[in-house]
Length: 283
Image (tube, rainbow, N blue to C red; front, side, top):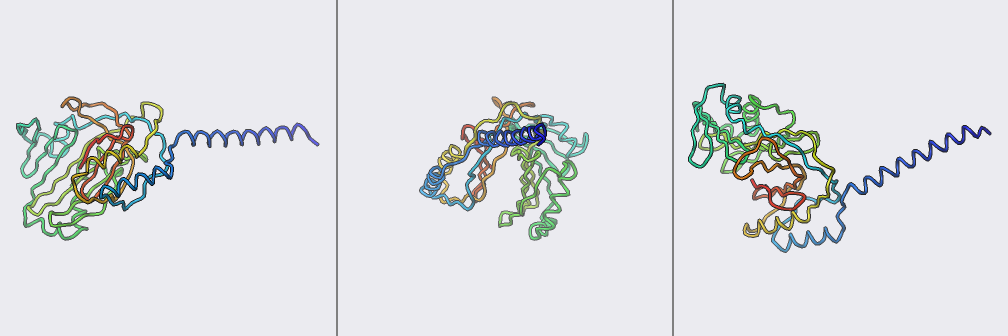
């Protein structure tokens, strides 16, 4: 028997086993798994507060680090040039600290929290078909967005049509991480306007090792936030990133985005910090 060859094979086998065990241990300590009792308690809390759950609760969550981000909305003049046309706008302040840029039938409003609202007046006569035809409504919104955004990182949601108009949202993904600041909310309104609201945040890598995240604190805070809203239905739960870019009423150019839970309901969308459970934003 060739003992040298046998020893080599055994060394390789032990090496493979050790690598496998290392990754299993690493996986165990880089995820948080909700216990059945925690899941049961969460469902009971929601039911007791008149909250219906039409989706599944996340059972296993990876440890996640903070994300470094750059906020491009601070470049208001550059954004106005991109959307309204270079030097084709005038600007004024609305008295509440918001800059408003105008050009013919178009208007940009920077809200002071890192978002821009783009309004286009198209007239009642030109809006009716976009309100009743989902396909044409979606295409009209897509054509407007493509004039100044690359849409390859955006995922279009299903159009929602009711008496208030047509709403079409887009989610933004950097690799596999959703950045909630970049979500696009669009509305086609019966009074003859199209309104588009979103942020402009770029990801610049991560700042630290992953930390434990859990939906428990977020759900407890969610119950407190919606307690006066009557019966409410949770449609979707997802984890991504949200950057608080307003520091003392000043919008910052460079910042950090914490992992965050997005809870989508029939009465709005709520974003909670995944480290602390605190409410970060609502739409």
